Image (cartoon, rainbow, N blue to C red):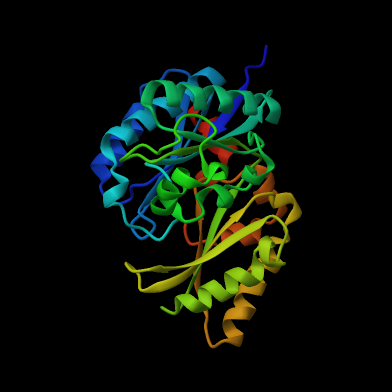
Length: 303
């Protein structure tokens, strides 16, 4: 009988202190029945992303243990970074990989959210396919204003209070968004300029919410460590996005305003299907190598 395989891609609000990130990774790695496939950290976003996959019950426990370690080691009151965040463990998505569907991942997300609240006293918001109200399908709606504004808003605005726990946020760990979704590709384009307003203008041009490309989320940020502006994007349905056209649009918009593209990068892993649809697009990325393809990692580790 073929076993069910689910992927989890949690994001943590720490990208500077590798001892903290290592502790989170170790918490995941101690769980039998799952495999850590990838880890990446960014100093400007001050954020780390893990990718692990395995049997649903193991992946769920890995997510909870990682969250516990983040709650113990990360204080959002001292956190600074260009990426929006509401929690030490900021977002925990579950993605169907094999012999499991999105509805089952929703059930898994709800279970993990309940465990996080009961074990760790961290309030939970459900998003994506696991959202319990339509306004929370989009993660940006939950994270609007970040930790600092959300912790004030929950006092007076019932619509911003957590789905589980609260209504007040955890004093140092904030809250966590737990969800279920289809494949998401995190993709960034760096510009040969420090002009963050140019990156923000381009992000507004290409993102779906401003009338740009469907299934594209985008924001413009400044990377202090590289003195570059970046168009940071999430591609939420890669099969519906003409990615070469997306790249060309960013390049054209930059050139029309006197800028150039410095390079592009993938954060985390991509599914094999995405690579097969546009191999030249992904091979253009600065950090591309075959081990960034999810199925290659799973096969190499023989889950």
